[in-house]
Amino acid sequence: MTLVSNALSHDDTEGNVRHIRQSSQPNALVRELPSWVKEQMHSWGQPFCLPEWDDDDEAIDEEHVGSYRINNGWKGSDLCHSSKSPVRISHYAIQYTSTGIGTTLTGIAHFTAAAESHAGYCHGGSMTSVMDDIIGWTAFHVTGQCLAWSGFTAQINVSLKTPIAVGSVLKIVGKIVKWERRKVWIEASLVAVEDDGSEVEHCTSEGLVIMKKES
Image 1 (cartoon, rainbow, N blue to C red):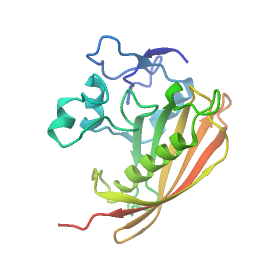
Image 2 (image 1 turned 30 degrees about the vertical axis):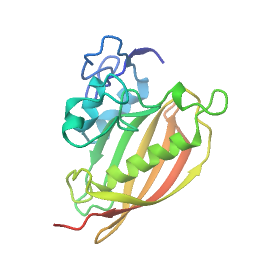
Image 3 (image 1 turned 90 degrees about the vertical axis):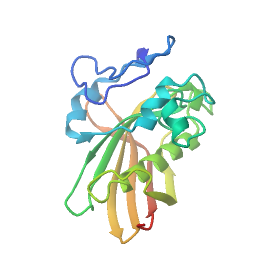
Image 4 (image 1 turned 180 degrees about the vertical axis):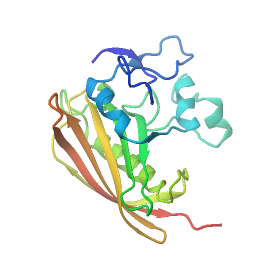
């Protein structure tokens, strides 16, 4: 993989699939994405991003975050969406269903050298963090729109199947499988996409999210 920036495109599926926004930091990088992203991203649904994630690209370091995050109560950078994250989720796209069941969130996760544990491989906790993130954000779309921060992850069962090499760019998928009142159940997976289009599972997960009571 060629590292050419760290602000990644949500909708540029032509050419090299590179960046959507340029960081104001002079030393910022933009990561070039693998070819399978270009081939698949158009089928994932509607891209979405949040200002608190974009704001992280303007941060100087973990303690000096952007003005949006500071003004809205955050104390630091997002664990999974900051340009400085050891494992960074750079893209999300959502496909809704009419009932909420089957609504699917798809994203891209880059496992950097900062997530390393065993020599050359990433820590299992970095995989679990990604599962927690996609399970929560999938559930936040259960009503047919994104209601950010509208619930809390109550349970995650994670199965680590295949080690992840440092530098890997993987696809993450979360799907709503059950919804009862304030409880939303999600199934998620983290996969590598091979040159022939086949997928290798690195991690699977089942999660429960409890939505907040309506005020």
